[in-house]
Length: 171
Image 1 (cartoon, one colour):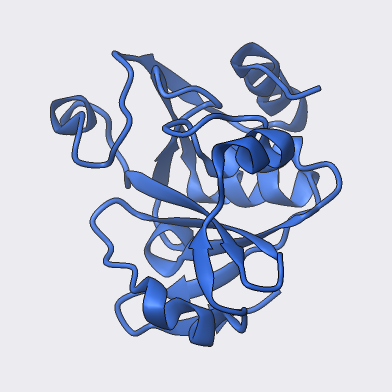
Image 2 (tube, rainbow, N blue to C red):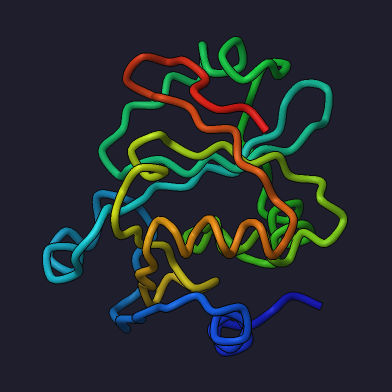
């Protein structure tokens, strides 16, 4: 059973991840909610749930304005050709619906079916913002606390510089 927003935030408290959550109207695309983001400090994100031609699942978390070349990305991360994963598979593995995709949803991937790619900009950011499993809120954590969360759930990100289209750190 997938965690809820409240369970996720309680889990953060349990593992020592400091967080601040801001409620707002539902946001479905990066272009939406610019006025909301302007009031929330830190790097904002876009998250892509992808599946490669061999069936491997991928979650890409990038800075909101990053350009992600899906035609080349597979060469950079060492996957087969990539396409978007469907809503049913997203819900099955990450426990979220389209519009609510977030790095925090990796907490629901108990079988570790999803490989995680993190944008270098986010990896180096002081503060990062993701949806807390729902697109009606944004949760801010420090970069160090994002790493603490990932370590707690046993996920090591592959860090990619999307400007240079190169792997910086590979788990």
